[in-house]
Amino acid sequence: MGFPFTIEDEAKLLPLKNARLTGGTIYADCPFCGSKGALHISVNKNMWNCCACMTRGVNNSGGGRTQLYAKYFNMTNSEAYHNICDLYGIEKDYRSIDVDEPTKEEPKRDVREIDYVYRALLSILTLSDEHKKNLRKRGLNDAAIQKHQYRSVPVTGVDNIVKTLLSYNMDLKGVPGFYMLDGKWKVNFTPALAGILIPVMSREGYIQGFQIRLNKPIRDSKYMWFSSQGKECGSSPGSPVHFIGDDPLAKTVVLTEGCLKANVAHELSKYLMNKPMTFVAIAGCGQFNSTKKALSSLKEYGCELVYDGFDMDKFKNPNVYRAMAKNFDIAHEVGIRMEVYRWNAIEIYGNFKQNTPYKVLINDKDYAFYSTYTNHKREFFDEFFADEKTGRLIIPEPILNPLHPHEDVNCKLIDVETGDYSEFKMNVDASINRCQDYTVWQKKGIDDYFYSLVRLKNKQQRKN
Image (cartoon, rainbow, N blue to C red; front, side):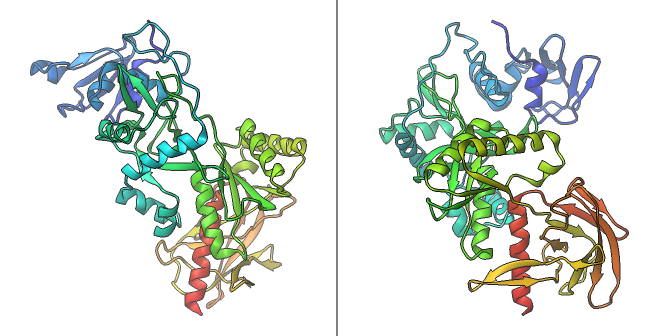
């Protein structure tokens, strides 16, 4: 049968060192013997070999498609085929290279049965120190990390995980991520899918599925679904909607992209708002079926206002902007009010003095300010400080004209102690703005925005 991918596609999934394409051949350091430039991958012939391994008489020192990937990850060619298809989202042909009959995929199980298996799976897995550190950098404390049940995707011992689940008398048929291969149950954890396992929660508190935030993006994708679509006894997770909030009947909800972003923003809102914000997350702003499903559910449960909390590049990326407009059309169709949640959080890189207040004068008229709640009382501040860990100056609140966000806003960054200032321009169309002394970096996510506010609030409290 024909392969739905090339050996070049296969090679892109491997961490090959010093890879270069010359005359239809990819030359790279051999990942098995370490010889520099010894690995030759023929793009035209879909073949590969290591001349150094062949000279030493090493077995399997060359071959065709799937064999390089299989040897690197120590798996069968059949497993390699399935993994490569999964990673590239190839759905037209999930057959084993040894089998001509199409595999029988199972319907997805009831969410309560899926939840039962997934919670057992989480009890087996752990979270690595590296991933815990990554989550802390996003603004989550250890209690929140434990609450959201993050785990690390294992890269070894995956067969033992399945054996343990089967010893619990778990029925894995139709549970996304599990499948049968050559008469044995498998779990779709591969080294290429190494990353943070993120539970996708329903309003009722059931685990509907998992997203994986990859350690190394695949074809520019940072996230993948935990899935066994197209595999024997496997299933697709679909694109479930994630709910996070303290009030399942919240009247105001923020719609955003990505479970992790929603979780972080919700947890940080506890430190900033009089009442924590409720979030609903879909896989992407272009997931219109998921958007309609989410908005219809919110309407049914009495929600009155939905904020569009997608990343702020919606104002400068035409594709994202069109998707945002479509979401507003869907909201109108469903009969629920939607508004844009705006921010323009920035961090300024430069040589800033610690504990020295800075102000931002906008168009020579008004000072930028931010607000937060302390003991249920809202307070306003117009002084900004450098972050102690990064040394960057945090400016979280909008520095733009809400009616004309694409127009430049003239700003002066003023050292309150000396009166010295630097000028820069701000608008939503540039990720990076440079002024005479500093580099201004925009933070596009609502989670970044809230984390900027939290760090400023902590700084202000220590100052007082």
